[in-house]
Length: 109
Image (cartoon, rainbow, N blue to C red; front, side, top):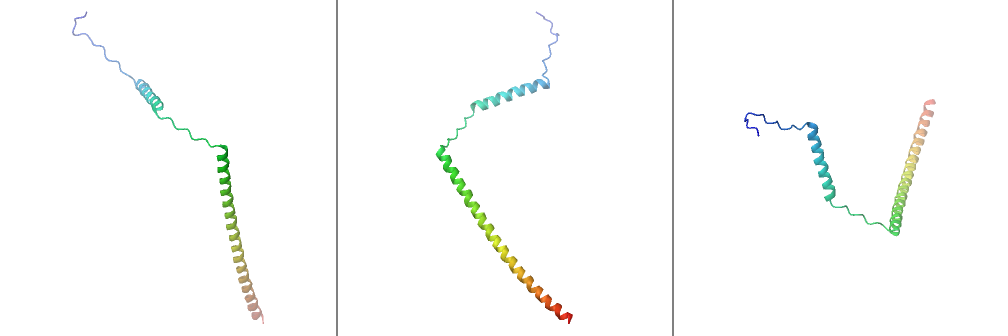
């Protein structure tokens, strides 16, 4: 046994930055593993029977067809409205042309 009181005490070991990163990674991994193991399992959704699937598919098809028909009716109404407006414009243009032709005849005399 060494009775020398002046002997040097060994310095504590210093952990490098890589060591701290390894420790933090190990702790983080342990926490994620614990969270995954202890979290409640998600409930599995109820499966549809084939009949329920076909019923939903037919309902969706009917909604799509109804929407398609409504869009076609709106397009038809807009088309008729545009044709009527075009006809009104054509009659106005014909009237203006007739008036211009009369003015042209008067100025030639």
